[in-house]
Length: 264
Image 1: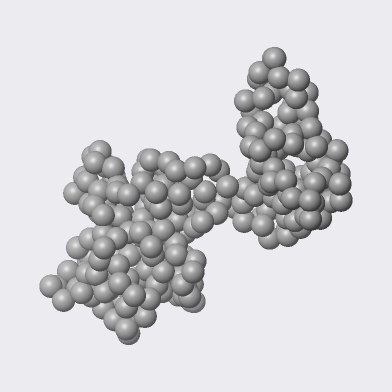
Image 2: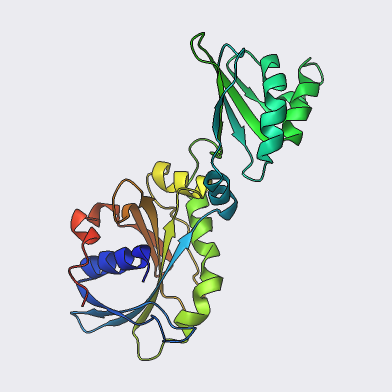
């Protein structure tokens, strides 16, 4: 079992007053859900755990080489790039293009569509490299370029909901095939690499009030923000969709949920 599967089972065992029993593992074959939750009120829950992440983003950071000192820039440029951007092209061309943008923050898309802006041609070149935004901090003692891939500022709850709902179909068959259970639960961790969805959970404050349809085979959908500061991982936010509505369970997440004391 992966650590995220173990922590999710421990968390729900804590919240639902249950014992978590592994249902999937080596030699068990494909198509089995991850856990059986045996609740003290007699319910049996089939639980499948998955992680929602951005593979392009993860691949980008695994490559390294996100920061270089570049003499002559007169400060540090923070360059927001598409995760699919070619790193070699970025390092080859940015030192010549960035000095045309010495003033604070710029949105590349805005400039390239503004015919009156004399920096339009340079912005077109930046866009062709996969650059989305640039900010500059003048500092004579430091001259460097560093990359970031964050998607933007605070967003509404819809991004987190969309991320969680996107995991329904890939995992529905395992849960729908569960026999002799009372409920079928899908638990979705949202990794920090999934920028908008992760920020949505962090910043929205509460789940949406709109009705939710999970379809057949899934009775409850959990979505949790990964708290990477804790080892093993913990949940900083926890929402639940059941009975056609979203609920906020964040206040019920406790530090004890990181310890699989309810599992046997």
